[in-house]
Image (cartoon, rainbow, N blue to C red; front, side, top):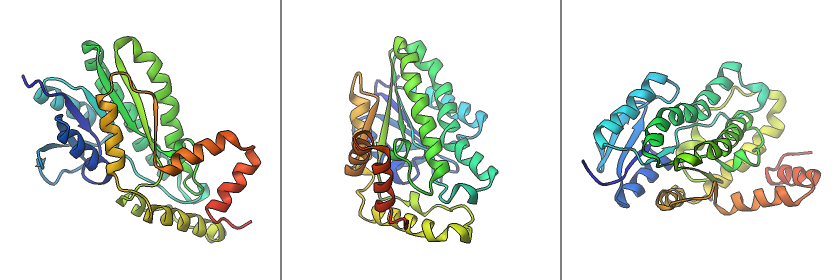
Length: 267
């Protein structure tokens, strides 16, 4: 049986997930990446497996395959997710459910699937890519914000529950990162919101244009994976640290005004 530690990274076909998989492989982990429909079985030494985090059977089959092939599972990185942008009223209920099904319940499914193995071994790192949007809501990202707020609450609770089993729970909370993430489809726009929605989403696009690449997040994940007892929250990028601090520091009204100004939302 190989003595190399084994890592499973969801959503590893591109962007942050691919960067994390590459970095963990560089650090000596045996890495399994996932995608809904992998183009190849292996990419640059990373084994690619099919996985749909919204499907119980797919999750169970993927985790079993990793443990069977790797002999162990030391690190799980919950990265799979997407953005549904637009006003709360602009999204259908089905679109809202789909957002939570992937971004929140996908984390739940993966966590429940790997915990029996980690509890038995009394070891393991569960690392989830959350977001600054799970701490400070981004205007016109309502359902994405909700999914990340839910993840934050779930994992803070989980950390208490699995600590007796030697399992480490950590989150990475990036601000804007330059990836294809922001090019994903939005809710159907309604003219009533255009005056406020377009400047807000345009400001977010500008943040993304100036943002660092996904290697920054990958480096933090790799450090967590090597740390025996990592802290719960790890903020990445200047704005993730600044905005979360300002929300704590400023009166609510002043902070809200600052958000509207920062996202160029007209009064």
